[in-house]
Image (tube, rainbow, N blue to C red; front, side, top):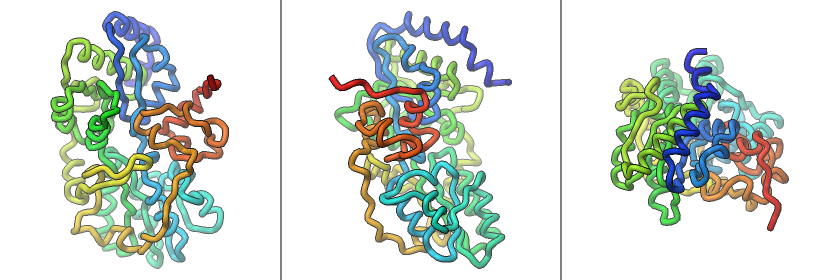
Length: 366
């Protein structure tokens, strides 16, 4: 298959690993920002095949995982109201809130529907004019343009029963927040190729210059990641801190201007809470004043729920790369994909789910 099998060639993988061993003369710590990249690294065992001293730090690149607990509790409070249809992508349904999850609410009679395109939510509102249809809009810059289009489409149709509960987050402010932490160990980043396909990489150039960290825009297949790691290590060894593009087949410097125009029309930047991390300035999107009528958080007064994390869950440390899933006492015991305590064990991009699917187990206590 074009652009798939070519990037899974084991012979080329061995060549890239050999080149990494020749290039690396120091230990280096590199963070991949994207949860999809994390799953490839762990599933293929790439992180364990790297030369000694090169360590991958798994970052907050899972949009489901960083959706704050308060947003999930708010979504469930809305879903429980009579006359409401809550729509969401399927991986949000099993993410635990303070006391339950959307899947359990659906089992108890709430009208919670899985959709496969955000436009399905608009169609649901068209087909149910007597009911309020709410779309739980989460994700990074990758999904935000399509979600913005739902607002424009609903506005053109004159729908008054459609709204978004928005929890979009942005990558560059998260990288900045990590680098500002005095305990940060990250020396280079692999940037998410799909985010950069939308936004380009100009936003990363000031970060690379200010913090003197290389940033390599990278794809998601094994060879993408190995080449991206090699490019990052080469920069580190040479003392450079540039933004480079490994994912040239899909990304160019300025990104997708049409998608950016839609984002600028429908959304504005805002401070946003990240699950387990806290509120980061200007790290999220909210609906622009012109489209405030489509804001579910304004349409429904659900500010009351008090959200509390499970005390055993260390999702915040997992999402910032401070700890590994195997450091958690609940991992693989109380917390499994069937009985998750936190979002990183639920999502298809969560680090805990990646470790569990790869059969990684906790080390025996010393």
